[in-house]
Image (cartoon, rainbow, N blue to C red; front, side, top):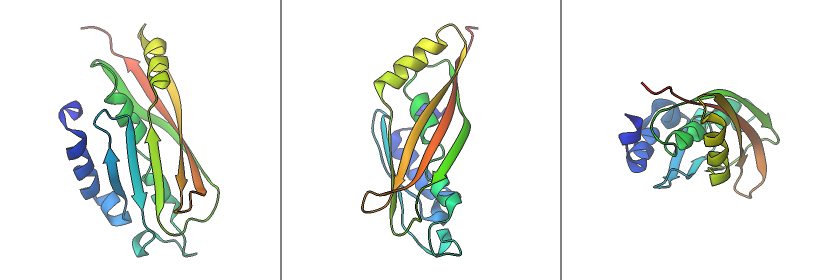
Length: 153
């Protein structure tokens, strides 16, 4: 079903999703081919920690589902795709507007297709930086996406 929803509708739904709405996370753009996604989050009362900087959970949340969705929408039907693991390295305190830009490169898709063509699972590692308004890295997120080609019925 997810493949039938356009990127525009997905963006609209994400921006109304309660965890994103409450944290102030906004999906600004999903490319028509699902190869690029841009997300941002201003600092506000609902995502601020005790120290007056961005709450780490909100920084992670703004990066959560995108690589898995981008992969899903760029593979042919018949694949299982889900987030397997993640890690986040907080590099600096986040103040102001945070941004994350996700890019799915053809080389990654080629690797995934090659590694799964026999029905084997593949764990693909993606990375994205969360940056502030000056372009300074605030957090580095590593996402592990599980992909497996389903057996023909």
